[in-house]
Structures are given as structure tokens and as C-alpha cells.
Image (cartoon, rainbow, N blue to C red):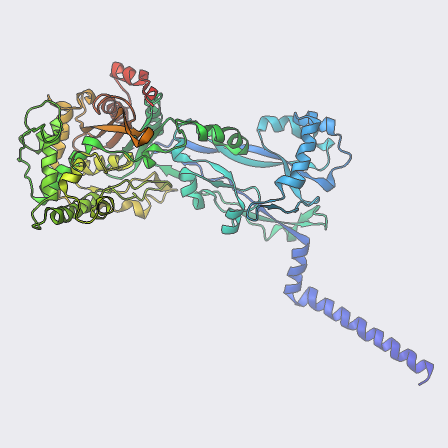
Length: 628
């Protein structure tokens, strides 16, 4: 082959190879969308836009949770040029040492800690943006922003945090904190410094509160410097704030309840009987929810709140489990009538040799027994419920009767967790045969062993939420809707779960006798709740005095001041509010402290004012938390 021939062959090969490259590039860039999208993915930067969380209103349209504008001072290290550390520190109100420490933490601590693997992994990137300072107020940023142009690499970013116009309802509303690694791994919605609900309704309704993130695609250089919007922003989406949440809560009633319980340990639960909406849920001591807004405040305040011996973070209405005392007699009377072991006109003598009692006339019927709160009466009623001669063995007979009794109690929502829309709710305890088998042995117990349950003592443990719901059941004459906080999300109305009526195992016809007894308890001579009277309001209630013990050295029981408990509803006909008030270590009976406190709450809710200032002052001035 001549030289000229070889020359043409080589030229031809070059042309063929070049043509193949050109064709391939044309195919990748014009014909094949996959390659086009891959190229776009390399050039674009996907930025998530976080919407403000849903706002919250009370039942009267008052805003109880809102968003307040804050800023983050962001930085990109690669864009920082000749930083004058002293001038920068002076601008943000820090020292030079604090600025250097912050750079160190960003590089080697904050952005490197892997919570899941519990080790340090370097993942800091000098070309990525990081928050140098978070939670900067509007006023603070107004001083910083005008001079930021003197410090290349730093810029402001708008953010928001929660704000509570009322310093109340902390245990209901909950708080937010920065997501953990496990949150991000569990739900791809979260990333970086996102906030998540950690308690209260903020946690329970988190999926709604957070809204829908928006996406903005930005074309960047290899060093993450913005060039512009990707394809004119046609793939961008707008962040969507979730619909507002409307609560059944009356924030002014809630605030009044917290005021009444100041200086006391205890709680108040108020429910609208016909809807199950919670009007107030007071836990005392409590705290201002604004103390738990933002990472800075949480770091500053959480430890002291958690370590406070009075437990302000502990939601007493939901998690405290107390003996209900004489308030329990209402349900014993209802079960006794339903089972046919007594009639509404059954009477029993007040035989103090059987069980101790205060001085009052013998109860001639159920209504009088509730009015006088006669211990021997309800001892006799409960014995008849448990021992119905269904078996010749008193042990087997008690087992059969107690099993039936426990089923009745469960139908009243007692001894089981109410499906309320908040986390951390206790179930209480209604002892059944299996419970006593485990405690005493199979067929080694009978009614005489467990008789304390007849007057709400011993192994019976209920939460204040359950007791308030019991009051609502009696107000409704036999049914309830599960207590709940959220009245509506947007304009959708009640959630389906909270539209369902739960019927008890007791017929409606038996409730009027207990209702009348509860009315007499307040409005007739010999009643135990005379301090609960409010002129113009026919109220029905039942007091309880709960014995209180603690274990001392050598496992010995030490008697402490009694707890004071009261359940009530009002008005007697077409009730608008049912309530439980529980005051720990008060040293008085249910009629001494809990009953007048509840009556003030009822008067405030129904009349929007309290006229008996002397009663109000007595409760406000009482410092009962001295009883430890």
C-alpha cells in the first residue's frame, strides 16, 4: 500500500470515530431524556422549602399557637474572604473566641455526629451552607443584616418558630425539637435541622401540623454557587401550610384553672358531655410553653423542668393513677341496679362495724346513699354484685361475680386506655379475677379479701381523665364520646373516631337515681359538697376523700394527708360541662377543696364570671403544695 493510500485510510478512521462521538452526543443530549435528566441532576441543586406549621385556635376562635418570624445566619465557608473576626464578633455580639469555637463545632461536632452509629463521621463540606447562628429575632437581624455585605459568605435565611399568646396549656400543646437521625431514617419527609413535635398535640398530629414542603431547583456550579433557577423554575413547587386546627379547649377556662391550682399539686379535667370535647385539662404545677420554644430555650430550661421535684412536665390528668375514693360509689350503685341485686328504693343501715363511716342518717334508697356517701351501704351493694350465689364455693362465686363487675367497669371506660388524641395516657386499673389470682392465688380470695374496692380504695386505680369521663357518662345518662382535644381540622368537622357514641352496660332508666343523689350531695342538707353550690346553677356532684400512703424504711406504710377529689356536671338538665378536680395532699375531704374548685370552674364556664369572690379568694390563697 502506498503512502497516499495509508493517509486516506487514517483520515477515514478519524472521521468515522468523530462521527460516532457526535452521533452519541446528539443521542444523549437530544434524543435520550434519561441522559438529559442525569445531566440536569448533576447541575441542579434541590432545595426544600419548609412551610410554617399549622396554627391552632381554641373553641372560641382565640389563637393559642402561632408562628413567629425568626432568622438563621447562614454561612458558606468557601465564599468567606478575609474574615475580620473581631469586627464580625462585634457585629453579632460575640467574642472572637466564641466565633472560633462556633467554626470548630460546625466542622467537627454539630455536622459530624452520627446519632445512630454513636460515632464521629466527618461530613462537613466547605462549599455547603450551614447555620452559623439559629433563632435570631427580627430585632437582632435588623441590626446585623445591613452590615452583612461586609462579610462575604454570610447571609440571612428566614425561618419561623412557635409562639404561644397564652402562657397556658403546655401539657396539652407540647413542644418541638430538632429531628434525630432515627426520625430522618423513619420518614423521608425530614432532613437536616427540621423540627418535629415531641409532646402533646404537636406530636400526635405531627403529620398534619408539618404541612407539605415545597421544592426549588437551583442550577449551581461544582462548588455550589447559585447560577439561577433550573429551566425557569417550571419544576418548582410551592410549600403548603396545613389547615388550621380548631380545639374544643376553652383557653380562658384553662388559664383560670391553672390560676386556681397555683401553689397546689393536682389537676382539673373538664369535658363537654355531648361531644367529648375537652374544655380544660389542667396539670399543676405547670410551666409557660414559651420556655420550650427553640433549641436555645430547650437547652436552657428542659433540665430544670425535668429535675423539678414537683414534676411540671408530668401530665397528671393523663398519667396519674389514683384511688377514686367515694366518687366510685356512683358507678357501684348503677351496676347494682342493673344487675338487679338492689332496686332504686333499697336501703341499708350505716353499720360502722362493717366499715367506717361519718355520722349521717341511714340511707333509705340509692339517691340518699349517694347524697350521704355511706360506706356501709356501698359495701353491701358491692358484696351483692360480687357474690350472687352462682356457685356453692364462695371463692368461685366471687370469681364469677368479679369478672362480671369488671366488664361493667370497662364499659364505662375504666381500667382501659381511653383513645384520646394525645400520647402518654395511662389505663388505670380495674382488678379482675386474673389480677387477684396473680396476687393471692387461684381460688384463694373472695369478696371479704377485696372489699375495699366497694368504696374506691385498694387496687382500683383511675386517672382524672377517666373520672371526668365518668361524670360525662352520668350527665349523658349512659353513654360517652371518647374525650378529645381537636374539634376540627380546617372546616372538616369532628374526626370520625370522635363521632362514635359508646354505650355502657347500664340502662338509661337507672341513671336518674344517681343523678338525683348527686344533686342532693350539693343542694340538700347532709350532702358532702355544700361548698360547691352556685346560685342559679343546678349542679350534680360527688365528693371523694382518698387515703394517701407512702412506703418508708423497712417497707412500712406512712400515712400522708388525704387527697381531695370531686366529680360533677352542670346544669342538671342538658349538661354543658362535666368535670373532675383532684387536689393532692390537701389534708381535707373532697368537699373541702376539690368541690369548691370545681364549682368555680363550672361557674366561670357557664356564666363567664365568678360572683362569689370569697370562695374564689379562699382557693386562690390556699398553698397546699406544702404537703409533700
